[in-house]
Structure formats: structure tokens, C-alpha cells
Image (tube, rainbow, N blue to C red; front, top):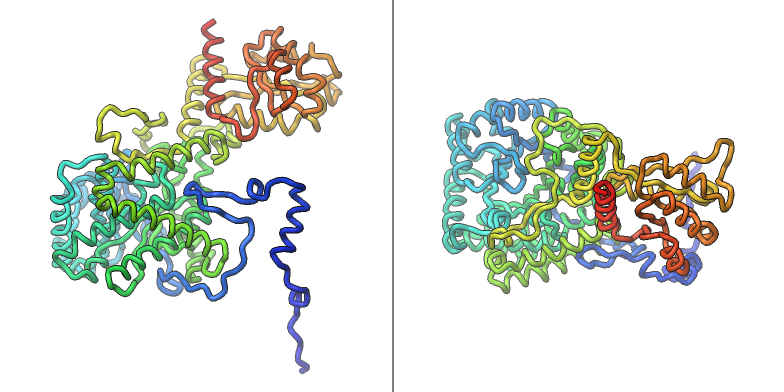
Length: 635
């Protein structure tokens, strides 16, 4: 048999250079700014280039063992212990590999959770094999009581403590950050915390026993680097507390990490990789040889929506994918209805199966550190490490995590990041699919077992109590838009008709379709139903200069607001006359989709009150729309 030469394919072409690529880019940009068009930045200000080259021989980030799957964890948070037990057993029978016991009042409770008492813990875990199933605790304020109840249950069942696969999750600093205050100073809390951990270790529980939990920062709107810096500072504080009574090598094995994973795939993967690098640096500074630390993940609360909640399935799947590929050892997926209330069995099944598909059908855990060597991931990981380390050093200079919380350093930084993030959401730069972008104004109700006690209103930004001012309050980024949708629904329930805006489409469909679609999307994000003007039968566009048909359509649609939609060329010919005709027909407020710069003054004089366009403050405008409609209804 003759030998065949391998296909050379692209190898026969000369290698392309970055300079050649830049030359081609310049031709496409046609003088536009490279920085503005192609370079983006994270909320930490980290620069993301449009193109990277591979980093050859980049070392792997040490994490899970070779081809080892991450644990697919399922939350158990039903307040009724019998119901919680039934759900836990059902989940285990159908593929879940571990359980996260969410205790009432914990960072992840979201208004629900298991009571932190022995009988509730015992009933919830009835029939669960504690020596075979990993259990992770999301502890509330009575952390000691919950741990003692679980230890007593292990003893009752005659299980050897080393065989019990329990991550106890003591996190006093996380509890302080969530509450905004503490009844005791850290110098008194630290010895108590250390005694609890040493007690568990002395009984033979392998642990880990304490967790540095970044969700409290992420939930409050913090950036990725801030979340990393906080967990690093908290873990160092726990190391200092523990080293007084146990060898430092044992102390580090008593600590694990928990991070939020959101739908920004690249940032989430880079964040989980960065954590391992940062912790290895701390271990080296302590004179220890770095070892892989256990890292748990939960899909992010702040990205969850109440509106069009089915989109949450996509968000949480991307988040779980990113956390798993980023090296998480355990991943918990929030059910897609979590923002609406206590999820039913269907929502729990989707949360469970989204991970099982990634693990069993896609085999994503088979490759160790798949991002290694990718120029984009390596660069972003490195930048996150540097940014997080800088803030970590600032926390350390303030006296450590506890002192930084007491001084409000962490809260101030997180508040700055939250405001920037909320501004990006308000302008729809950070679009929320199904809520601020592509809303489904006629969506149906989604089933939950118990409605959420958290409601949808935007959290109060001016609390009266000092301790509340220091609290890292959880937010959901969709809340302001959801509040507008909720107000519109109340109008529909009481009057039988939804708030409306009339879309005055000018010219032919080719000329008005793009901006009419933009306006419909824009207004319906605030619950304002967009009614398009019908074309005369057999016609493809309105006769030029004939505004009577539009005025007649406006009068019959029941709206008090109107929005002009067309191209800049058509606006130059017809916008002013149309605005005047609509004003005469009773329009209380007239909008225009677009920014006809030189025509703006003339259009305002003709009756156009406001312009809507990509990048405008959509939330502020929609709030004014609601106020305008309310004022019209009163008169």
C-alpha cells in the first residue's frame, strides 16, 4: 500500500500577521474608531481585545482531577421538612449527585430555606445516605446549631465522621457582609469560629468546614475582581483564625470557596481560573506548596428574571457550562422560576438536567482546563488576577476583611460597581433578554409552589439604620423594568386595557420597519403596548403628505401617546407635519425613534417631545411614559 501524504490545507498559505489583519480592519471601519468599535471593557475596566493569538505552552490551572466530573448539586430549600425531603430524594433518584441544604436566613435562601433546628434537619435528610452523597451547607445566622444537628444525625446513624461527605460552610464574614453588622467584634468571633472548625476536625470530619463565599458581593452588584478579592480576604482571615490551634497545612484544607457563575461565559470561566491562581499565590506566601482547593459554584441570582423566566434556562445553562469549564468542583443551578417563588418539580428537573446534559451527553468535564493556551482566556484571567490582587491588598491594608467591612470599604466599592452596572442596564447596553430586550408583553403565568416573599420592587437605596447602610443587599438587575411591567399589569387588571403607544409609521415598510421594531421593543420593555398604524387596504405605504389616515388611526386605537417611526430621509419630509397632525388629534406626548441631529429643533417645535435611540436612558424614559399616561388618565 502506498503511503499518503497528509493534507496540508492552510499550511501551504503564508501565515497571516496582525498587521495584515489591522489593514483589513481599517478598510472596514472607514475611519471609525478602533477603540470604540472593536475594544470592549468589563465592569472592572479590564480591556478586551477583538483578536488574540494563542499562548503556546501555557500551563494548566490545577483543579479537578483528570477527566473528573464536577458534582451536580441540587438546592434543598423548601421550608416544610417533609416536602424538602421528598424533593431531595426525587432529585437523587433522577441524577443529582449532591445536595445543598439552604438554611433560612443564609446568603442563598432568597426568602425560603430550611429551619436551622435538629428536627427539621433530621426530617429533611431522612433516607439520604450521608456517607455516599456530598452535602453542602448554605448556613444562616444560627450556624452552630445547624452544624451540631448534622453532627448529631451522623452519630445517630452510626456513620464514621471521616466517611460523612459534608462541607459545613461556616462563613461568619459572609453573614456580617449580608447583615451589615455583627453583635460581636471580629476579635471575639474569630476564636469561636476556629473552635467550631477545630472541633469538627478533631471528631474526624474531613471537611472542608469553612467557606469564603463571593455570592454576597456578586448578588449586591459587585464586579468579578471585587468578588475574587473579597473571598481571598475572607479566606486569609479564616486562615489566621485557624492557625492558632492547628497546623497551617491542615487549616487550608478546612477552607473552600463558593462563587457566583453568570451568563457572561468568558468572564465566568476566567474568574474561576483566576481564583485558583490567586489562592495558590496566598499558599506560596504562607510557605505552603500550592494544592488544588475545592471550589463550588451557584448560578447567579442577580441575572434571574421574573419576566419571560424561560430565558433563565439559557442563562443558567451558560453559567453552569462556564463554571464547569472554569474548573468548579461542584455546581448548583438555580431553577428558572427562582425569582418568582419556590420552584415546582418541573423547574427543579430542568435545573438538574441542564447539568446532566453537559456532563453525560456533552462530556465537558473530560478535558482539564480547556481554556489553557487560549489568548483571550489567558489574558482575561491574568487581568482579573491583577485587579483582584490590588483590591485584596487594599482590604489587607485596611486591617483585613472584617475591618474593611466595618469601615465600609468593601460596601463602597461594590456600590460603585452596582451603580455602573445599573446604568448599563438602564440604557440597555447590558440588555436583559425577555425583560429589557425582546419582551413578551402577552406572556402567561408560570407555576411556582409558593410566591416569592421578596417581591419585585427595587430595593430602597436610602435605609434609615446604619447597619442596613453597610449591608450588601442582593439585587436582581431586571427589577426596575419588572416594576414597570407590574404597574402596566395592574392597569390591565383594573381597566381591561393595557397602557398603549401608537406607532406612526411613515413611508414604506422598507423605510419604517427597523425603527418600528426598535420602538415596539423599547416601549413594551416598560409594559407599554405598541399599536402599529394599519396601511390602507391594497397599499404598501401611506400617500406622501397625507397625515389624515394616521391621525384617524391614532384616534381609534385608544392611545394617548405616539411615536414616529421611519428613516431619516422620510423624517426630513414628513415628520414635522405628522407630529402636528397627531397633536391636533389629541396626542399628549410624541416620541420619535432615532436621532435626526440637525432636524431636532424643528421637530421639537412641531410637537416631538422626546427621542428614543440605542444608548438612551430607556428606563428613565419609560418611567416618564408611565407618569405621562397617569397624568393623562387623571385629566
